[in-house]
Length: 335
Image 1 (cartoon, one colour):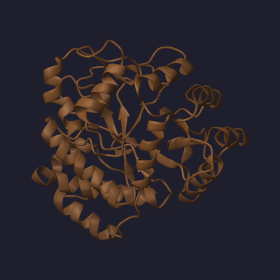
Image 2: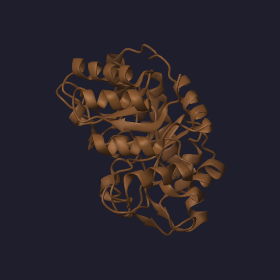
Image 3: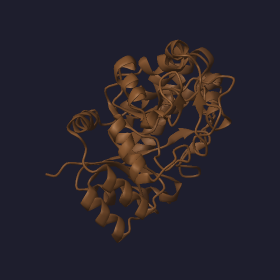
């Protein structure tokens, strides 16, 4: 069997086109990512997931950004609408880690029922006075220890529900004062402070199976953004201790400048395992996939470990979980 392609790709719409199927058959991408444009109904999403895996020729991971708050691709009235994570964590007070576990165990139940077996969470970025609004209320708190505790609850809730967590945005996006969807943030904090704060939250979660890079420059390490920096990737591996599958944030975001093929090659050369391309534009996806090629042997080994970490849902009753969450947060705080 041929090796998996070193990419995670998005599709253009609610069902695959013949051209997309042909590309996926040729590339055999490691995985796929879904967005609101891919979502119409439960039956349609399940059919799309089946199409993606059939086209890829393997049991590909299918992930999504279902954080709650502004970043959730599944919406009411079919699925729950959730408040921002920072808001719900604050509402739970001393019980925040349990509340976040319950919240993401319920999210996992909705995802698993659709055939989605990964979620781009937890967000372990530590919020601070300069955190850009695009990220701030997606965070869980303001200290590394508190964020790591809540992020562990998020990861455990997802895993118990049969969904693989993707830790983001490693090694830490909280000090970024710019939105990396549009601009390249620069963080000039000293290496020691970063290690004691932002990076510390990720170090506490380094055992998780998958993580997503930050499109952020950390001048204490390199002048290149983390996704493209061998120095930052080495720091993630050696100092933070993360040895799971490392995926880029969306390679087409405006924080990165250059052509997509070149950026793809630079990200993999820096030490990322797979490149994420989100927007569903077929020609862009083809260029990224061609530049990425097959996964390296170390990347494939990490991919195999991530795939092996998938487990069936624990069978917990969602009505009971919902009642427990409401009791902790003075709810209901979800639709």
